Image (cartoon, rainbow, N blue to C red):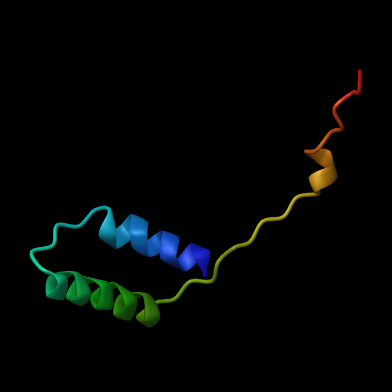
Length: 59
């Protein structure tokens, strides 16, 4: 879910110039329609966290 809102923020809101709330609504709905016509699955990546997390030596 966070990924979806991040995409909307990045692709629509941050790049947009909106003349009204209705204009914002139209552009958001267009983005959603285009996304739904050509959806792409999210490619999750997971690496072993133990390879990245190392204990801090105690003093």
